[in-house]
Amino acid sequence: MTQERIAELNERFAQSSPEEVLSWFLAEYGDRIALSSSLGLEDQVLTDMVCKAAASPRIFTLDTGRLFPETYSLIDRTKMRYGVKIEVFFPDRHEVEKLVTECGMNCFYESIELRKRCCAVRKLEPLKRAFEGLDVWICGLRREQSVTREGMQMIEWDANNSMIKLNPLIAWHESDVWDYIRRNNVPYNKLHDKGFPSIGCQPCTRAVEPGEDIRAGRWWWESPDHKECGLHKR
Image (tube, rainbow, N blue to C red):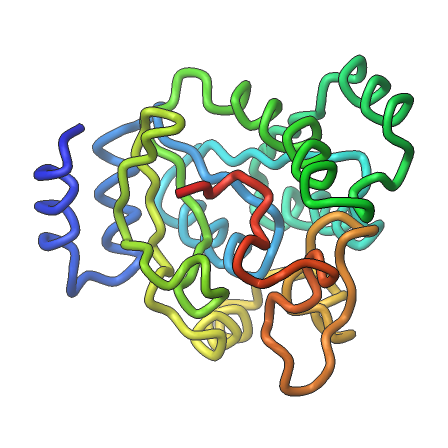
């Protein structure tokens, strides 16, 4: 996929709704496209959309082993609601054991390097396995979410994984997401009602205070300029 082709697709779908974009890509790529879901608000919206657009969409999630109980509950509630299979990818146990033995159970608090190593073991390696056989991965990224995402486009070429990254909700605001969820009765993580706008691993996520950035509760001890786990490296 060339940058020229990516630019053409972005221009083609510039005025299209997320549903229209998803319908085209799902039909075009068939079993070579999947939704990568973290069970966040945006990914739940996309789950609702892809389940309405395709008979058997592929949806997968990463279980790091450190998720909130509410997140595990949402996986089951989502499967029951849509009658869809959600593939769950776990980290390699040998790598987790090595990380914890060498660095400690909560080493990610000690330095950015150790936090990124933890993310690499628990997220990036299983993500690579989830990508096998795929040409496109659907993401719930929005420009409004953080400073690291302001320049992202709806359709991007992910050079790190040699595939297309599709961000149908890239231009949506948080209010758009909640409007869709309420209008369509989409199941969501109950922690969102308790001050958690962004939810990841339990030790690395806290509730935010009124007026704080929506990503302020993720890796709150780090600078906003590099608060990514590496899944969306640019």
